[in-house]
Length: 488
Image: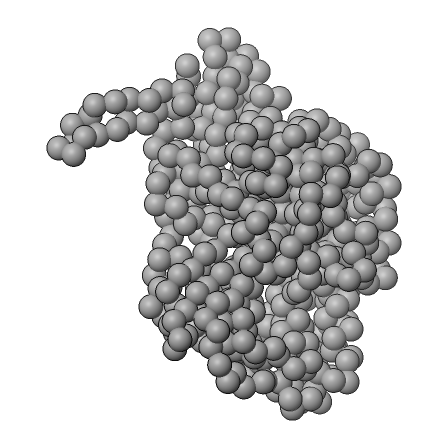
């Protein structure tokens, strides 16, 4: 076989590669998405005081800083057996939704939309955020950057820093909000709603009105039929900070739902020797069945598209209108078209901006009661949130003094690992024919992973990995090769 390697893959957080194997006719026999870096956060969090964990895990990734901070902060509440007061919880939610706006906007404009605004077959030197700004105009680009900056200002005002926040304490929030600050955040949030509306207009003008692009968005070349998982509130609507995790299979049937530590009843993780990224699957549907799609598969996706598939609707009026248009466009539910992640992400950006505005107008948010002091240490806590990339789980056990003894992190990109492999393989088989592996065709393959908004720095926790996807060499205790596994 002939091997084609895209290394490094582009426009993502972290480092990875794609290995494509061609048969004698030059057509795709198989393809793999590989993670080539290792991060050991689950191990070196052991021995750390739990109250220090949120500030530490915010450094897992400079982009995802707010999500690890928030999930571990929620877990710390369980470790110390304390519930935040209403104002403390609302400040956390306001902080988190501002993070959603700034995260979704950078992912859309810098990583996803260049393929559409500049063009999937454009020169790679132009198919980037600079090329996007040149295409839409400097005024629009400047306005997007300015408004996104306002979301970062909310993040900084509430969290204490623009990059790695420090305001988390078990049982609440250390930062109280003055009336003057509340008014400022309200003004900024109004502009964030404008950013959400602008983003959806750009998406409609560039993608939805372009017949060629809609063939890609709605076609089978980027269609992966798996199950979905996300969080819902008490009305079965979308929620990000807190809720119940809901799971459906590839045909839309309810598999089950869980909260907190109950995730252990639903999710198992498989390790493969050719990647540093684990493969979660839904064990309620059965044992590991491999990286396969269709009815009966127990692999699943998380993130914006998954949330659109599992919720009844959005919880804000402007986003709800776009949610209805989204599902009217595709007809059937669940939507399995991977490029629809971009559209779903734009809808969520508007939804999170509307939530920021609602919370900034809540009179209770300026209450001085932002913290309930812990009085015990039960020693175990699970924090589950909907990160922009999908469901994020932080699980910690501590000793009686709150020192971490065990940690488990299941990150959105980890949940999506198997579907990403399926998407890459399907796109490769569709676009690479008779040995045509031009840069344009390879970018169409890369377009299969970008909708998932990979963050590989966050997601790599297994020590095994890094070898060839079709070759594993096993050595004896003296370092001599004694077995080679091929085509495993």
